[in-house]
Length: 84
Image 1: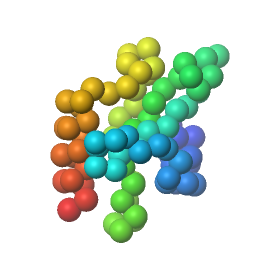
Image 2: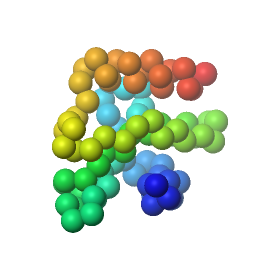
Image 3: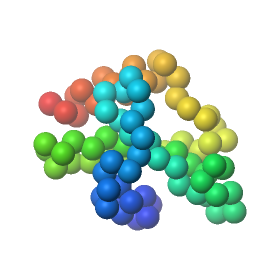
Image 4: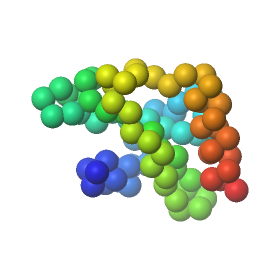
């Protein structure tokens, strides 16, 4: 967990923007023995104007490669609330 936190804090723009989520980013972290492609996806929201960064959730690639359109819509609502 500290590795994830330090990666995000070192460069908050390290992850790619997830379209349709209001600014949420994701990046890959390798799982032991699997590398980045078989590891986990970390979803977070960086709000530089508030000097805040929120870790929203972690998803194993085996659970799902990407998030659904409905999940993106819900995450966009969360992002809007956090930005207020």
